Structures are given as structure tokens and as C-alpha cells.
Length: 273
Image 1 (cartoon, rainbow, N blue to C red):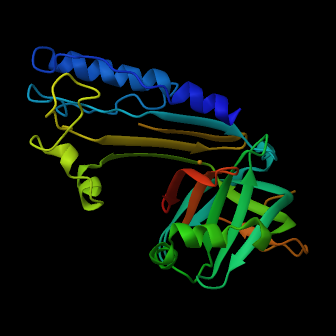
Image 2: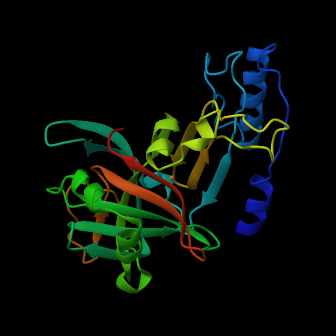
């Protein structure tokens, strides 16, 4: 299923548009292309003014993912609970609850719980890094590398356990201009007219990339996760039962991972409702 999804959503298309003559129409055409390929979740990857008559080349990438949990949360247990943004501020979230068997681990290095929530079919899963309440999320972020992520989330270091999982419903949407990030990573020629070489895409050789716009959308609910890029009885007090408790009622990191390739498809931070 994952391979079929890749074949469906990673198809390359090349179109010629007249940015000089039909600036706004070109922007709307690109946005429509992205909207169609993300099932309407991302409607405007290019905002007003991002395309102008001097624009020469726009590269657009759209990824859409929708997955159902292997163990779905029951909506009848979802209720309002406080989410601790920091030591002083709280906001009410709709907290989901599930008592089931999941892989659970703990990273002493950063005092963080690790939970894996598999999707149906078990090709993919969501991995959540939840620091202890007295550990700031920035501590985890500063230490986090891809190698450490693989070590911390190694299935052999995580124990299948019956866990009380509290996870907020969430919806995240954010936009980024990636040019500065890509330049810092060493990708500079693509943005410079005298060095850019996209002759495989254009009949003209020196056509630089004008803009790299990225927009992402992630929604997590009782049924599963919907994401695009262009994630028993509920009690407020601790339970007296013997099952370990994973309560994401304060800032955490989340990742959607493909098991066979160990690839991270989506990642993000949930720090404020």
C-alpha cells in the first residue's frame, strides 16, 4: 500500500506558465494543483504576491498522507483536559484515551518517554517523544539527531506494554520559505542565475529557482492521522492501576515513520493548542 501511495503521489509533472503575462492566473493554477493532490488540505501553498512577472521557475512538491490507527481511540472517552503550555499557562484540549498494548520506552539521557502508535497495516507508525513534566522540550530538541532518534526509538529498546495513552486531538498548519534554510545547508547554485542549471526542465540553462515555499498540515483524531506537506475512563488524577501511563498533556515531538526504510515522512512539535 505504501509503495502504491508513493507511485500515486510522487509523480513528476512539468508545465509551462506565463508568469510575466498571467501572474495571478499562474499562482492560482499552481495552488489548484497542490489542492487536488492533498485532498483539499492545502489550498494555498503560494500566497498572494509570491509570484511576480520576474518569476522564472517554481518547483512544487506535494505529499499527502491519511492513516487509521491500528488501535483506534473511542470517542466516548474523549473529554476536555488541561494542556500545560509552560509552568504558568494552560489551555483546554480534547484529550483522547486508549488502554491497549503499545511499544513504550524511556530515554534517560533526556528524561523522555517514547511511544509508538502503529497505523493499520503496520507499515507506518507515529512515534511520540514526551519529556517528563520537569524537563523542557528544548532539552530534547537540542540533543536530537537522526542517529539518536534511531537509537531512542529502536524497537528492541522499547517494551510492548499495556499502556494508558492520553493524546490530544490536534490540528497543525504552518508555512515556510525554505530558501534561507537550503542556502545554509549548502544549496546555493540553484538560486543564482549564473550557476543554476535546470536544463533538464527548461530549454534555457541559467534559470534559477525563484522561491521554495513549503506548507504542511497535520490532523490527529480518534480514527487516525491526516497529514499533508507542499500527525477505560479518563481521569485527571493518576490512575491506581498497574499499567504505565503516557499522558501527552504538555509539549511533545511527533514523527510519522515508515518501518521498512526507517524514513521519517513527517515530523513536528505540538507545544500549544
